Length: 204
Ligand SMILES: *[C@@H]1O[C@H](CO)[C@@H](O)[C@H](O)[C@H]1NC(C)=O
Ligand SMILES: *[C@@H]1O[C@H](CO)[C@@H](O)[C@H](O)[C@H]1NC(C)=O
Ligand SMILES: CC(=O)N[C@H]1CO[C@H](CO)[C@@H](O)[C@@H]1O
Image (cartoon, rainbow, N blue to C red):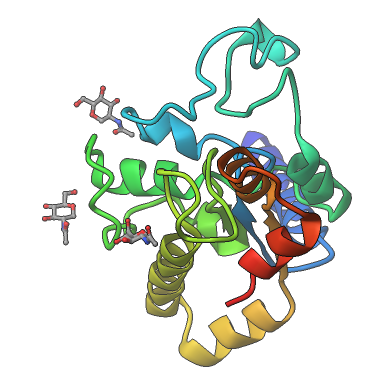
């Protein structure tokens, strides 16, 4: 009897887990950008001035601890993830790398094999201080964020085949939240800038 009940409980848990996994409206969510979208990548950039690991960031989280968000609580990408049916916001990419290699170095980016399979439902590449232009900020520029994404995709292909990864990507959400730091830089470095000049500066 005890055995049967145990099996039932496990079946129930499996069902709940499966529902949770398939509850999302899209298979995965990938986030790029700056502090408006960063959920903790900056925690892994110790030399940077764009950090959020101090009070009063996080005061409205359980325990009131900073989470790496430039915010008292959740940020827009979290709410979007929840409304898409995900139980968690996509994790900071650099936390996946750190867990995989368990190294304090962030230059182990090709080493995400051992990371929790959580990255199959997406990751967040946004660090505070970044911009649309690669020359904006000194953290992780947009080109590098895309390189990280490419590394992650390669890792996913080692778990699923390339066709399945392509299918997953084609149905996933890609969110970019950037531009504020480009504007700060441009308008503080130019004497009498116009918005037209600013938008021209963003053209390739
Ligand atoms: C990946 O991490 C392991 C330790 O977990 C280490 O032995 C290995 O050299 C790393 N590989 C690369 C390419 O950094
Ligand atoms: C973008 O980041 C990469 C990697 O850190 C760096 O090599 C490159 O010089 C950066 N580009 C610019 C324009 O700063
Ligand atoms: C995820 C993990 O295993 N983290 C460990 C990495 O190594 C340090 C010590 O170097 C531990 O404190 C962490 O728990």
